Length: 230
Image 1 (tube, rainbow, N blue to C red):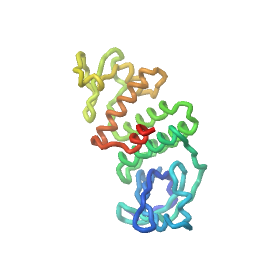
Image 2 (cartoon, rainbow, N blue to C red):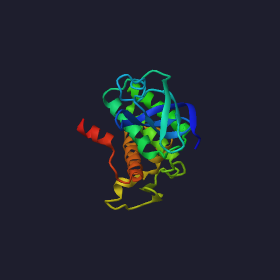
Image 3 (spheres, rainbow, N blue to C red):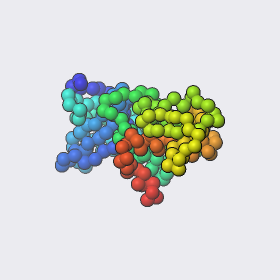
Image 4 (cartoon, one colour):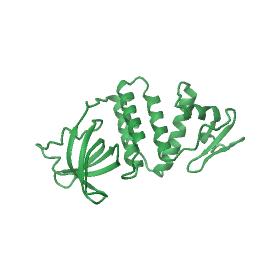
């Protein structure tokens, strides 16, 4: 790992207090993937970082450090803050938590970065929040190699999704297996991010949750708790 990285496009995923006056911030960067950095003095009233290091604000950042935990040197906002409210805000926090929890440090995913910008714009417009979320979840899981190929399937065939293993043809699923079963035609539409059919939307939500929960090892998402409280 190099000692210093300059001018990286990034978004803040999560921040938390660190020592007396600093923050520990997780960033999603275009070229370096997920990066964690200490922002020294960020909690002081006069810190120049206080208004910049907010979720959903495109920034350029520079950092130094040879260990996995970096020290932020510079941050500059390079775009307009997306003012998400209500369900859009909760969904934005959910998307950020997925990236924070599922991405490995310094594992770059430039295509996923573009889809992250896409889903933020979908949340801002609030026209089709659910479709935007399913598309992002799908692309995230594809990038991580967590979904099997959904294109080479028979439309009228029923498939059992086994997280971590793949899809197998099934004829008479048990009661426990039924929530993990999907018709081939539904999976083909999910592969194309076509969520115009309400049944496909429901199937996509089940599929993504099964795959995401498997990757999390059963650990709960804080953002889901917020949805339940709302």
